[in-house]
Length: 247
Image (cartoon, rainbow, N blue to C red; front, side, top):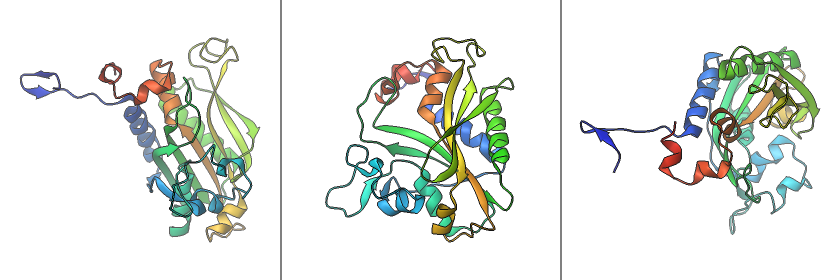
């Protein structure tokens, strides 16, 4: 039975729900629309429409939960699949975010789970640049962690963006001096992003000469662990009320 005072039931918001709500609220305030999609997804939207090569290791059984006796059906490995769906049903310009649960067939440990939450975003317009991406994400992270946040972009590779970047945030615990939270580097890897690959726009019927865009994705579980000092991601999925009632 839930604890109560004067017959009023007390409820506690799960830390993952708190972070999702805060992230979505921040992007909505910036003019983004919230979109959703199915967790049981097709290989087309999860991979093909996002320019993931046929021989990419993410398609292999060790990374993806393919559904037995259901042709080309899987548990989505990222919420980017919703971006592909959205692009095929909406005319640009647009700005959207997708919160949701995703699944990866991998071993679990203190920082990895087979299920986790993501929030991904997509902006498509006529004059979108990498500067727009950096400005948007910098503003968002300030809303989430405070005005002292500074970020840096590092080159990276994702099949559906070019160029791709990893976005690091200066460690909010040590201010960049180096500590256990940032593993002595002074920086925390917070999300991946990049400019939408022209092939991805074209695959969705969007003129890649006229329109450009940027996309980003962040792990909600990682942000919850950083914000609340949780040292094992598996604690978020135990259903143990002692975890939830702390927040």
